[in-house]
Amino acid sequence: MIIVTDALNRERHTDIIDEMYRLRARVFQGRLGWDVKVTDGREFDEFDALDPVYIIALDESGHVVGCMRLLQTTGPHMLSDVFHEILDGEPPLRSAQVWEATRFCVDTERLSRSGRASNSISYVTSEVMIAAFEYGQESGILDAVAVIDPVMNRVMIRSGNAPYDYLGTAKPMGKVTAMAALMDCSEERVARIREFSGITHDVFTPEHVVRAVFEAAHAPTTHDHLPEALKSYLDEQIAAAGTADELRDAKALAATLATRFSREEDQRYQSVH
Amino acid sequence: MDLIDLSKIPDADDRFLRFLDDLCQTLEFDHASYATLNPVSGTVQGFANYRSDWVDHYTRKALHRIDPTLHFGRKSIAPVDWGRLERTAHFHSVFNDAPQFGMSDQGLTVPVRGPYGDFGLLSVTRDCPKHEWQSLKKKVMGNLQVAAVHMHDNIMQSDLGIATLHRPALSTREREILQWVAEGKSQQDIGDILSISHRTVEVHLRSGRSKLGALTTAQAVGRAISLGLVKPG
Image (cartoon, rainbow over all chains, first blue to last red; front, side):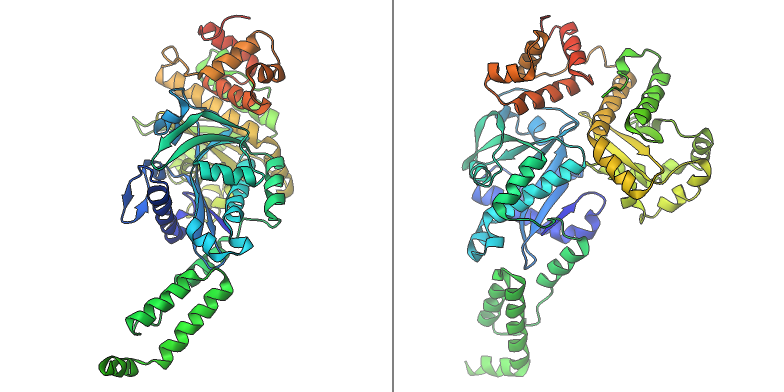
């Protein structure tokens, strides 16, 4: 499920955006080793202060698993100000009908763990791309220039979503290289990605539905009084839930144990052992 | 798109209004306006072909201070349909009286961000059934984006007086492609010559046009030649 946030609805979704910043820190500093600034486990930079659009993907259990950031190329953007190395010293594209996509990533750790088709890396990648292209089309955008890493590039080539060209040349950027890929924002491309991924539904989920799913996944737990080992086991089960059903089961287990194992029993347990 | 090329019309204030009239006629809107905030003086500068009694009413009540189409429009990167703003605090205070001035509250605002932190807002309205509005938007959104950037760039250059100092930063690819166009090659030919896709030729041409402030490729070539960036074919 996808939610699009911008300066107009951002206030309602600060918690989802915060989780996205944490995903970006894990991916860009952790996995890719890019030289990004991370504060309190969250990665954000001066371009996040320019009111960009975020395309954010959540899995069925309400966790942020993918994202992308969009900016106009007529104003300040990363290829003009930060990533100009990739362009071999050439000035960047500037067009009313080209947007720049950066900080495109998916939570490979979480997604590969679950092993479900709808939670696979390529499914979420496709979902984010479909959303970005359809959102762009509605805004009169014809092409996107995306700063990506080679792994993302390969995933896209395999998913019916190969870039039609690249600008400049790939440049070392931490543990991997970064490249600027060109993609047309066309019906044909969206159709190819949809066919490959089997995504036929409207990828944009209504805001209130996304909120309900996200809030259910992040509701305060009721089993804080349980012994530490048991508590952390239950927390892990809840965090690892890949679907709405798994999440419900994990929470039900926690709730059952929490009531069975009342505070007094807990104290007796601790005094005996 | 057959819009007036702003740089070809000398008379400063009038040419922007004529551009808006032309835009309404070409893209089938009732009214259009352009606004930019002067970062130095903090004043809102703008042009509109609204009815003069609406402009008087808007100015007298200082509606620009609360107008959500300006305040939310400037923070968006995508065009904002005013339908999205209906639940914001001041939408109704601004638009409740609009119908009596022949002004529709069915409209959209295209935000433009410039390279110097400057921004502009092109707004258009049309009083018509919802489904007609939706299909019109789909049909003209791309042209509207191009028109908005064209108008904004021209106003920035006239306003700041940097037009003569401004030398467009064309990339090697953009210059090379414009050079081949000047020599009469088609986009298909150019793609073959440079061993790049038709789409790559197209994306560089669009960017070249934007940097040169031109609406058509022919104008872009002419301007690139006059700036000495491209040799005559």
